[in-house]
Image: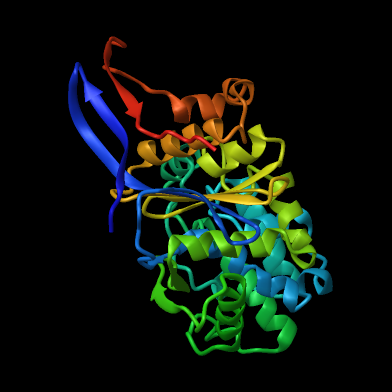
Length: 330
């Protein structure tokens, strides 16, 4: 692999952290519009970035129509949510509609990602549950497909379970793979595809530009804070663009943003998985691509915070800055 320097953090005038990675833009004809760094098609686990692709099974099975899922409920199926009551309520609604409960979720428990909700549970002496898991919506979606098709709900995470076979078959087609993808085990115990960044981007193009999956597109574009939460990079991008852009973050430094109007997709990977470097790189790329205007960025408190390049100390004195080395000329 040949990554390029994307972000450098300086304290004073000295470099403190260097963040390397890859930036790709791909069009609807599967052509590279932009390529910064060469990942040499190295496959990486897609992690939570694959959630909208995995949610395609909910549409294929017509579980969304059969159970009457709302747009918010479809959004939570695609989400890496923050675990607030707004989010967990949507997961509970899905489980109620499919006549299952949180005990049927096999994603494992963890505390909410939302700091205030986490502190609220701690104050009341409560622990996080499976419903707070940021992947609980995805699991509820998988279970809905199982119930609709009368498949075993107790083994839905096994690689050879019908729902997982269907999902991986879909990913093969959407991501234009020759064979079924290799799979890895996600933090929530679900199988995830291992893909080159190019194929990740192509998968998003084929999903969100396909009229068949319009319900997923509308769900994410119209419910930005259900798909993540306040201050989350993907949610803030969707909100700032008015749903013109659909974004999804993935663990370990990945973010995918599709511009459905331009029919192009942006893929960013920060190799050291630094959250700040990912946020700055993605927002800088969207600005240079003119997918987000200066006004849209400045008018968004969430994006402003994520894009802030000044480094201050505990006395609020300027101690350094973050510099980007991204130059997009299209």
